[in-house]
Length: 316
Image: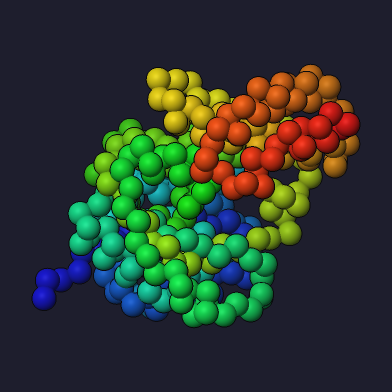
């Protein structure tokens, strides 16, 4: 039997002392053993660095780096990209955890199907919420093979999966000039995934929940509105500008830009943000996106009922 190929697991950390033990125990105890866990502490002010150092002293496959805090997750992830040494890599959030077979199933999917990227479904749930994992995954064992067009369309529509960097295993050779844009504060994952997907040809999607994404109290949904959140709309605009010659991808990108604009417009209303110019811009994007939302068959029926939502936004 051939030796398993090594996989780099990239983990950015900042003030996460209460999550580190669960996350690292999860990664150490994966059924796939040939992993290199690369962790960078981004200038934490709590005990994160010391906890990680103790783990690194006990486990030879953990490599620890420390850097000054630059208040940019994109710069931290770009730093991690420079540390990749293996054929495959994946990102992992220190707040989250995964099923024991997470890495193994993604690896064999990408390896034995000669794919460039493997993806899986993920749980979105609050901390300490109990789930019957076996029951949920019983009827979700199918594998989907996607070409570049299909994979990008699915991501832009947030249908099978979305544009987060988690729950994806990628070939390192596909990075080329792909990196994270520090000017995008919300949507930087989507921007990066779009860049690297353009370098891929074959994708394998596992219709199985293997990654646990934990929704925090300070998540984008719950945190107070900041003007930086609008960069997510700008991220979609950048993509729209790049896919003008591709009708399907244009429809997907324009429809999701409109839905994101609705979400951000709601945040401005909820938090009493007074910038009228911003609200006019968001409403214009929403209005122009409605025909594309109706055309995007990858969206759920609920999301395609946007005219009702648009009428509500006129009140805001």
